Length: 153
View 1 (cartoon, rainbow, N blue to C red):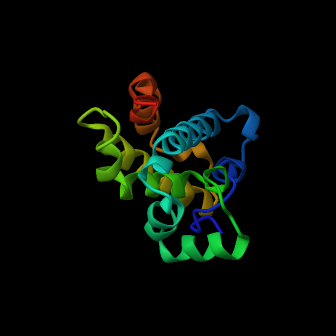
View 2 (view 1 turned 120 degrees about the vertical axis):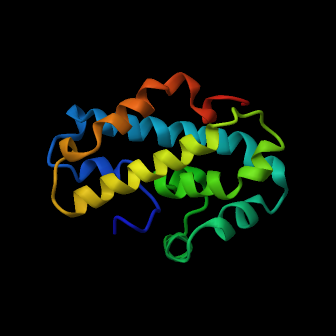
């Protein structure tokens, strides 16, 4: 299900009518997932011994929690971009106490959530990625060096 938000970070791009290998959006989404995952892996365990339950499981949506439990997922590597972005957003206060992030970083995270969700909507309606708001993807890709999850590790 595209809205479950768990497992297989490349799932969104593979549902495209275009080959994932030639789809630049696949690269952007995969890079975003990898960078968010790297940032969370560097900072969440320091929040306490129960970090997985308190800062991952408890912060996911109920459908995401159910999918996580049913599939027995136990690491950040198992989560897709939607789940990773939700975890980052829901733990923002705790993470900013430990990592120095640019002031507008949270807006970037939420913008990336919006773009990812729009892509899923387009895919489930059977449209190609070319229907995606390109200005948003160019904006995200053009600021790659300033992505908040590349700092503070």
